[in-house]
Image 1 (cartoon, rainbow, N blue to C red):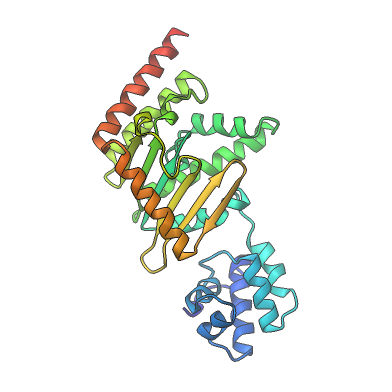
Image 2: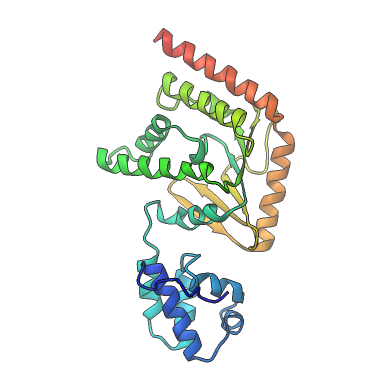
Length: 281
């Protein structure tokens, strides 16, 4: 994938990284495929970096510097290009979601970020960062709300969410906040044809993904990728065998979950229960 002619290398650090990588590669007389082979990745992957469509990676930048004899040039540019408004461990996955044609999420305890309300997101963020200033919390919440606009894009991905029933019962932010969140979740699953929500009930017992949060992403012209997350950490998974393993585990969880229709009914019932609690307090 060659660098697009209309890509301004000075537009942002990632574009500059891509332009410099291409300059160094061509000076070495290597094609994208040849450089990819030497760096143990595909030529397409190199092309994505040169086209500024993928955030450069620290490890591969180090390998490319060694292969191209560029000292630490690409590694320094990589640090600039990897700046992001979201947590560093999630930044790569967040960018991949923008290009995905489908996103499949599994969450045990919380509603996934793309479907969160502002009040719910604020309650979660405050719980995760109890000593942060209000400005820091506001920035986190604003960024999360901006990500939700992905579902309004003309080519919005299909979003399939499997949510454990526990996420419906924990009163994050209090009864009123969780009631509003579940009402919003019900509305998204009911009115958006490209959003499918399933609930994995307590009665389903153990499942392969119960100790983690998982996001699977599929693309029109790239291999699928996965992202796993725990508290304060996350990992982008691109190894085809591991992505397939995670995908199979997701399919098993999907098979054990309630149907979308039954799931929406349970979400609606849980929302009414929390709303009643809110009125009583």
